[in-house]
Length: 313
Length: 273
Image (cartoon, rainbow over the protein chains, first blue to last red):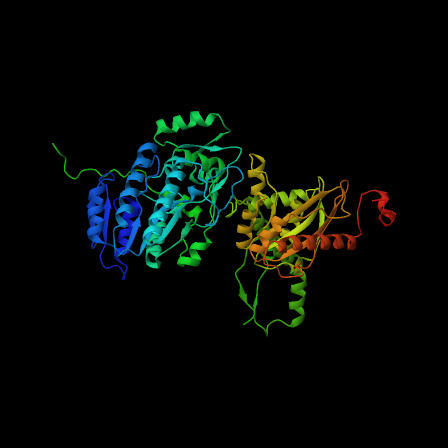
């Protein structure tokens, strides 16, 4: 509930008539004002506190959004560790709740993997074969949630989100595309899709409302290539063909936009997913297209410096 | 009230404001004479405006720097279609069989080195003004991504099924043959994708010649399996039926063509080709 996405989901849930009471857990405090929700600040490793809070609350629906994308707020190792800790403690605690009817977990379309011969635009029935560290982390979350769901007889819904972009969402892809000079694969330049944070939040609320019991791809309509995104943002394109990616990654790291393996994979192999099932099951369709999200990405202000009203000391 | 628009040329290049006509002040004859005098100028103006508008929209369509949900670049594909007309002069028939909006699989015969699925997809797409994809891109850069921009899909049944469920028209090539006399084997797994997606399968015969520009694509009526099957036999039978139907379409189109004076002789009848 402390991140942008969690805070947005909480504020949308507050407006839902079917939500009686709402509680949230995160390592960081909420970034927006929440009127009805109760917030608990707990770091991912404190399993006993998480279990205590969750079992005391005894929810009907549990939404698990605590996923750290590598190089978004933590380095890949720490991100995987936080994500595993949070999934273990929250989903484990959920198993102890008698009233629980449904669990909705956050996943990503990285779980499909982009190995050679993989389907270009997979739907939910395509077998999962993650080929990046982030994809494997998400796959583990889905497996854990499925195992718990089967064990306690609760519906499990997974929302496989495309890369989430938003004005304040920490995203390695967003950071990379906003650099003054952006590398891209000259030989492939494949298409990818993203999702706006507001659409992702709406999808979570719809899934909770409908007691989702299957995985769904949540992807904005349309696609764009890195080259096209760079041209839209009027950045300097740096075409790379292969070995020079290692140097580019180091330079990007020094420049403040580290490129994790799943983003590099996306720039080489593309990342699309079929989003029709979400419309059928949830009646939900993202309102912002991929191209519109990328256009907005370049319109969001970088850092707004607000001068102090009163000079201090 | 009727209005008469004065022509710009009548006022030394200036555009005059519309002047309300007085029906009683001009007899029909002077009006007709005025119309006849201004006819060339009006025609030229209208033609110029129309050509400019068309050129603008064509340029927008060609130069569109966007890809669709499957990675097809419509602007690039339009440019390639125009360029391909230097190589092929394709006539297309039977497209009235194809659905207007929903998905369908079109199976074409393929002569070696003829790029039949590619030119058939481009020609059918141009004829029905709808993006048509084709199967057969390698999953390796730079060829795979380049073909993806033109609408190519991987030859995987799951990929095909997803695209067909999404309402796409897809061209699949049968096995390669040396001539256009007959069709090669049709991959039953790809036909099975269409059956799983519950979309019709259309046979289409293609005829092109290495040394000539003329090419022909003839789409036949949808093929259905003679018997309802519960298992995978349906896709095998449908694939065989499609192949047989393509063969009959090829016969109707005149059999094999070499692009040489040999075509003038009925060699096919004596089994020479």
